[in-house]
Structures are given as structure tokens and as C-alpha cells.
Figure (tube, rainbow, N blue to C red):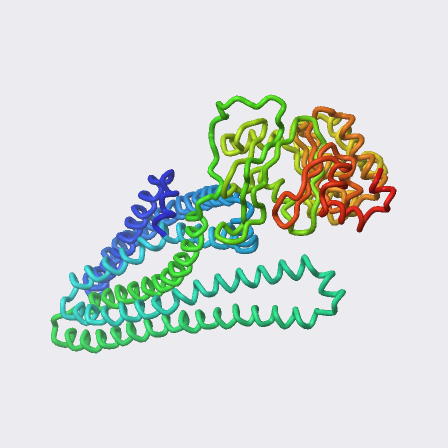
Length: 577
């Protein structure tokens, strides 16, 4: 909790002014019962109408003064909490964006979303309540006790004797509800992950008639959230009646003893009424304090979950300055005895990868599923760092580059096409936000997307739904290719990026890209031999190792892995050509 409070540095004045205003409001509120006692003792009993009116006017003035303090404090609390929440969300989002894809995958998108929204909102609410009410309740309780002692020490001792019982109630309920709130948030994460899986895989679920099975799994998770919430509710529901019971017993005892003191002439009627008013103020403050304790418990769990994200150190440590090492003339990409595994202590998915790619070459990367093809692309982009060896771009180690500089050199189209809500032009401009319309059309033309875009009613201004669900797979892939091309990158990586296209369209895309920038280095990652066989250089991956590097003809003769792939996919004439 305290680690997150550092984000309130910009609101130091507000954090001081808010409680100070609450202190002034409490003083006004605490003065009212005493003034009322004076009005009763010296005005009502003595039948002094002018004194009653004078005290009544003073009470009205104090009431308005307290209202003004409370109103200003409310505005200060709102301003501070909203600013704190906005700043915390910004920093948390920025930190999440600095994590590697593997770290984000391990945490889970639904968990990170909950922490960025629900947990931050919980902290934002706590800051508002901390300024408005956390300071007020102790002021009321302590001030009421002081005023009670000033009226009658004997009756105040009765109130003081009840304090340990009230403290025990607060302690026990806090102790038992804290773990329940942490469990509740964790169950919400699981439920969110379950919803995301079901919504994204709804077609598969229906195709295999698994609706009943998934409904049972969802019901189980949902019931877990319900049961934990009910447990929290049951414990929280005990606080108000238990506190009211103790305080009302105190009031009953005070009335009993107060009546005895009034008969004995040692206590006035006004003082007893004022004393009861202070006890009621303490009761209301305790009830507010109960809600604040419940809120604090929830906020404590939320703060722990947010801090857990902040405590994750990014795998990728960025070099903030451009590398001073000179570039190697003619080299686009180089791997030097690279060893890498997604689980750094487990089996590597790429072992002793060693090759150099000259500038301007078309490189095909082929191999079976899980052989390490996409890993090569991820290491060039520095989505991950190697365990051993080095990866070079333009002759410089990728670790020497600022990440923005490195990735501006590279145009990347991943296996799973990701489009964003907006227009087609907006999605293409993702690669270059300042690109003019002519450049957008040129990139779309190279990607063979211009014709189908112009057939749409709004052309390049046609809307794209979330994840591009209103487009076909081939249309999405061509827009993604255009998005990469508009960057005018030195290196273009197509990671199975044309799998949804027919052979003719795919060939047109490759030919247009090649003709547009002959000096551009292009990586084509595919499982289809027909796609890569015309590349200048072919890299054959087999179980994380480089089984062969060369042209189609040389590999067909010398590399058994490549030859087997060709024989399984191509005719004898196609393989030999």
C-alpha cells in the first residue's frame, strides 16, 4: 500500500489541506452538543428565550461552516483521487508495455486487465476515502471522548471501558476478511480468463458440442466467486450489529448512571443529552470506520496485486543510446552461435544457430512445427534475449540498440494477424502514423489489398471491427502486410503471413515487394516448400537446430530434412526446378 502512495507526491498540498478541512468540520460538529447543553441548561430550563436564540444562531453558523469545509474537502478529495488513479494507470500500463511477450503471456491478459482497471479503481476509491473519511473518524472518536470527559469523567469511563471490545471486533473481522478479499480477486482473474477463452473459442466449442461442458466449468468458477463473496458479506455484516450492540449497551448504562447522577444533583439534564449526542457521534464514526476498514482490506489486496506487476523486472533491458559500434558493411542479420529457450532452465528451442544474411537477400526459413522458425524472427526483433551467443542487425548486437531504433528498421507480419478497431487506413498507418494517403495506397497496392479495399462502400475509410472480425483471413493478412510495408523497413519479416492467400496472390505479393525495394532484406517463414524454394537463401530448421543453409538446388542435394519436406509437398518436377 505504502509503495503506491509515492504516486501522491504531486498532490502533497491536497493531501494536507483535505484532512485539515475535515479537522475544522469535526471541531464545528463537536461543538454543537456542548452548545446545545448550554442552551438547555441556561436557556430552556431558565426560560431565557434570548439565550436560546443566541445559542441557536451560533449552532446554525457552525453547521454552515462545517458544511463549507466538507464541500471543499470533497472537491479536493475528488481531484486528488482522480489524478492519482490516472497517474497510476499510466505508469502501470507503461510498465506492462515494457515487459517481454513471454512475461505478459505468463501473467495473462485477463489478470493484467483486472489489475489495470478494477484494482486501480479500488486504490483510487481508497485515496478519496482516505482524504474525506479516514481522518474524520479518528477526529470524531477522539474529540467526542475528550468532550465526554470534559462533561463527566464517571460516565466517560463507562465509554472508555467499551473501547477494548470495539477494538477486538475490528481486529478479528479485519484478520478474517483480508485473505478472503485476496482470494476473491484471484477468483475474478480465473473467471475473466475463462470468459475470454470461451468467447474467443466459441466456434470450436460449438463445433465439438462442448457447450454443456464449458457451462459447467464456468458455473464452477462463478460459484467460487459467489461463495467467496458471500463469505466476505457474512463477516462484514457482523460488524455493524456487533458495534451497535456494544455502543447501545454503553448508552443504556450511561442513561442508567446519568439518571442517578441527575437525581443526586451532580449532573444537569443538558449535559446528559450532550453526552448521549457524543456517544451517538462515536457510534456513527465507528460504523463509518467499519466500512473504511472493509475498504482498506480490499484496497490492501488490490495494492498487493498492483505491486506484484510493478515488481516484475522486464526481461529486456533497453540501451537508451544509439550504438557506437560501426556497422558491418553488407551484413543485414547475423546469428553467432545462438542458444535460446523460452524456459531459461529447460530444453532450448534454438541451439547453436550460426549464420549471416547479406543485405538485399530473400531468405526462406522452413521447418516443422516447433522447430524454431518463429523464434528466429522473435530474436531479431529482440522480443527475447538469447541465452548464449549474439544476434546482430546491421552488424551491431541487438542489445546495443534502443528498442525503438531497432524495431523501426524492421517490418514484421506475425502468424496471427492482429487488427485494431478503426478504419482500414488507420490500421495501415499503424506502421507510420504520419504517412500521407498516397503512401497508404502504395503500401496497400504492394500487398494486393487496394482492389478489395476500393470495392468496399467507404474504401480506405471502411470500418474495421475489433480483431478485424468483419474481414476475411486473406484480407486481414494483406492489410497487415501493407502495415509493415508502409514503414519502408530495411528488413521485412513475413512469419507465415500469407497462409490464407492462394498461391497466385501470394506470388504477386512477394514479386511486388521485391520489385519495390530490391535492396530490402526479406525473411519468409513458412512450412510450405513452394513458398520458400525461390528464395536466395533457405534456412532449414529441425528440432531447434539449423539442419542446412543454402539455395533450393544445393539443399535438395545435401540436406535430407529439406529433401523430405520437398518430396512430401512438391512433385518431382517442381522439386527439381
